[in-house]
Image (cartoon, rainbow, N blue to C red; front, side, top):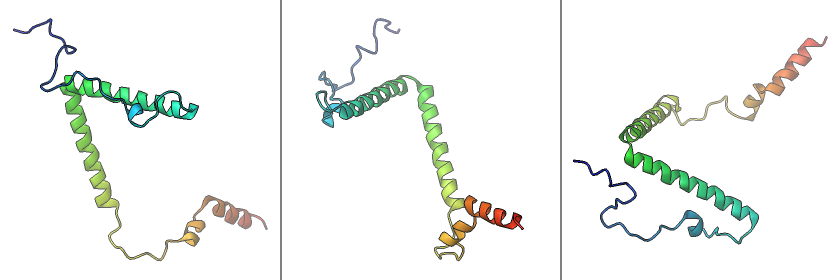
Length: 121
């Protein structure tokens, strides 16, 4: 039998403290009363912190969100390993066609200059 009067707000984990957690802004000493730039940075940090807390609450309460996150992280890591394995150079020897001169040969400006010089008689 489920107790419908029991809400997430009244639930506490074992050993949970009732003390309010410090914000990232206060830890980084970006409290109000400082310059306008520090205030803007503090507001941005507060927004990111609030978003993180809300997403963690979603992950805590929604098993499908946790599954999606795990699948996403696995696919991201597999893709990264694929890129490292198949697009990394097989040798540590420098190749002969790498350098500023070779890059300049294939640059857009150089191609325009070559095209312009070849089209004028």
